[in-house]
Amino acid sequence: MRQFGIWGGAALCALVAACASPGPETQPLQGDLLISNVRVIDFSGEAPDVRDDAFVLIGAGGILAVADTGEGLIAPEEREAGGLTLIPGLTDMHVHLWDEAELGAYLSWGVTRVRNMSGLPFHLTLAEQIEAGAIMGPDLITTGPILNSAGPNAQLNHQLVETDAEARAAIAWQVEQGFTRLKVYSNLTRDAYEAALDEAAARGLTVSGHTPEGVRGPGVPWEAPFDIQFSEILDDGFETIEHVESIVWHGLNDREDDAAAQALAEQIAEAGVTVTPTLLAFHNLWRVADTQGTALTRPGTEMLNPLVQATEQDMYDYWAGAPAGPAAQRDAFHMRMTNWLHEAGVTLVAGSDAGIFVNVPGLSLVEEVSLLGAAGLGPFEAIKAATDTPARVLGLDETEGCARAGCVADLVLYACDPLEDLACLEQPEALVRAGTWLGHADLMALREAARHPDLARTEENVLGGLAAQGVDLSLLE
Image (cartoon, rainbow, N blue to C red):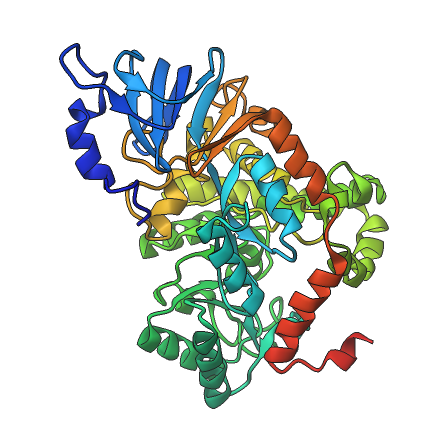
């Protein structure tokens, strides 16, 4: 738990007159930043908690009070926010981070926490530097390197294991590096997957990722069953299952069957598993096909890491020439599948798969929230999936993902109302990061800096991390 000076959130709330406006006999409350006349929306309940014309006092990185008047609230810095709406900072639950330059892009779109889903040792160092305030960026949570087996979904940056012993050794290496989260992937053999679950439980690692399918034999999935059935995974204690498209592939045998999809949604809900739909991941594939490649250079793509782009040229070429019709049909089914998951009561969190293909850091998360809205979630539910719900799923305390007294001061402000139009999230006016005010010009400067990644640094961090886990770098030549 991040502390606010000597005060914890609960103790502070009790001392500040039940977190309400100080009365005339209350001693003045000293903070560092006062935001005046702002509309505050908190998403931690079952409905939005809205306070108009509020005064938000911030000190030592936390919210000291949310009051109806500024009387008795003192701060050396005051920001008039009449006409602005304030909400908790956003969380992107599925990103791929390659260079610290991208951190500014996330902040510039109001994203104050990211979960990196393909970790290397440099991510642990970067997370420590952010926590210490040495580098400005969103809170960084990371898995270790993706654990996978050889097969059609294997990639160079994966830790490839086939056996019980290899899986245990790979996890031991990840723990030795300092990773506390494990990401598993589609090709994992049954032996490796079962060993990974056992080892993760013994070492206290959380597990998330694609649902492992085992060895993919001839005819899978249309004419032959998966080696590991999707239903076998549901009681394995995943923190989150990633990608609605992977659920359709593995859970529905790649069939667009409405009745089967609704039944599967009920099964996932009954198991109590959280899902990160990442609708944007496939939506952007369709977008590139639909524009015959023009979307490959849409605004924001200049913030994508050039090292990664160089490795994805085959994907760019394929989707630029792919027929848009079938992709549009599949995209629409993913939207319906997400709505069925929501209607069944499955907990959904917002994740964008930013950092790969044309998924722009920061922008992609607000686009994902809009897609969740288009899939059937109301604006409150869609934004909750990027604020309060991730904090709960990640096991963070009650001071995270909220906008009330006692909460961490990671906040974003808009000149529009995101509950009225989710597209509002694309235009943040200001950000409060760990109690520090960043105005619109500051956000634009962060975004501009993100357009200039350090290729040499990326190569050192990524290639060095791959070499440390035993990847043969000659395969890149």
